[in-house]
Image (cartoon, rainbow, N blue to C red; front, side):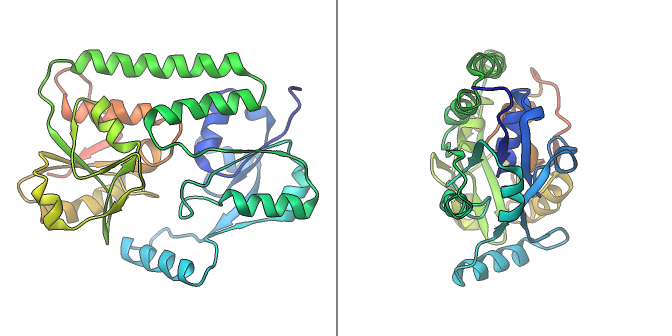
Length: 296
């Protein structure tokens, strides 16, 4: 494959993968949410837009999402004209979550309408290992297989280091809250992150989407630590939502986590998330991370 191939990334995690592979010079299009690195939205054409929910409460965001879905209206808008101008050779998309990004069927429809013959790679990881495999899938589609293997080997090496450091230590019961109004606990790869960090995941949904719960149900799981990592929020927003959890579970250790950075986006930084979790659960063997903040 030619190094001149143009890549359109229609989800933030894919953009992070492209940068991790050193392919940013081939990245032609991104979404309005692609903020890692911060320059991604200014260096590349934005072809996917959506509502600016900054300043909204979790309840307001939930109500907006539910209303749009009930109306059958997409949460994201693909600028077909901009995509046609970019004329990509490879489009990275997903079907994992319609709340998180534009689904593949909408992309396929747009490309067919435009008469574009771009290859479409759908990334739908459900586990932490799946996420690492998806890095290799992007690398293969872009023609840099060896580079993908090297990146994944480095990530697996870091995970092995965490495993070695926490081996033999007591594993606290841990739950991850992904939303507070209504209450959702983490799914997909998030329980894997907890386990990799030396915790026992409880009250979550391994390998399946994050799901609704109730405060009584969460209390019944007897978590010793609750990590609050809301989708779409950084550390400050997570800390605000963690206050709600602290009130509901007054006898539990509660931490805020920069969920957008290292928990909810299935890209290379999930390994940063494992290290951040480990710094909370086993601070005696892992330095405290700047990505977490104790609330109580």
